[in-house]
Amino acid sequence: MSIIEINNLHFSYTKDEEILKGINLIFDEKSTAIIGQNGAGKTTFVKLLKGLLKPTWGDVIIDGKNTKEYTVANLAPTIGLVFQNPNDQIFKNNVLSEVMFGPLNIGMDESKAKDSALKALKMVGLEEKINDNPYDLTLSERKLISIASIVAMNTKIIILDEPTIAQDYISKEKIKDIILKLKSQGKLVITITHDMDFVAETFERTLVFCEGRVLLDGKTDYVFMQDEELKKAHLEPPYAAQLCRKLNSDKIYITVEEFIKANKR
Ligand SMILES: Nc1ncnc2c1ncn2[C@@H]1O[C@H](COP(=O)(O)OP(=O)(O)OP(=O)(O)O)[C@@H](O)[C@H]1O
Image (cartoon, rainbow, N blue to C red; front, top):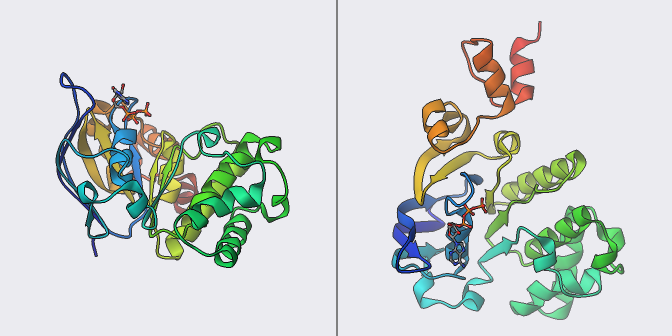
């Protein structure tokens, strides 16, 4: 079932330069990574999904709603976006009120919003920090709070912009688990990232953006086997796939786990 439909989407910030050059896509419930070099148009694209920007041409349809006909506030109960930098999102001086803000804003009553915020904080492992000031927490914890704030809104679609940037191994594993949990709850999770190993380990589908177009789209293992196209987009496959190529392996594995499993004697 299609949750998002993109028809012939074009977008320009200025008259002289087109940033998105005719994108056609359908998103179903598959967790999806968006990759591509800096400036390829990834963040612009997710801002269009969220309704923060409107198409110059074409349509973005979110759960049956054409973003041209709805405000960001109207779309907020359906689609949530976790910003790249948590400091751009966090503004309250108490963790619980920060995470309750989104749910209250989309019309949940106080007790439902609190319940939803507590569940989201539990999911990200920060339920013991409810009374802390977010600015007293580490960057990694602030990132998890910004994720919890969106999760608490219980939207059908959750977008994460560069969730693993500046995160250590443990935090990355936590974020991976959160994405897998959201997926198991039936949410559509779309994530922009530059971390190819994280993509290989976490997402069912991968889109490669290149100069405002979708260069590759498919199952993540298929996408990471398209070496020539990846080169065009200035991307390297995940570490395990590179290793398989160097070993002239018959089969390409995209995660270290798969590689080890296949080669265990
Ligand atoms: N507000 C803006 N006004 C004008 N141009 C912009 C604006 N925001 C982004 N751009 C330009 O649009 C292009 C695409 O930017 P965008 O941030 O969507 O790319 P990206 O793929 O997300 O890159 P990155 O991986 O670096 O975040 C870039 O050339 C950028 O300079």
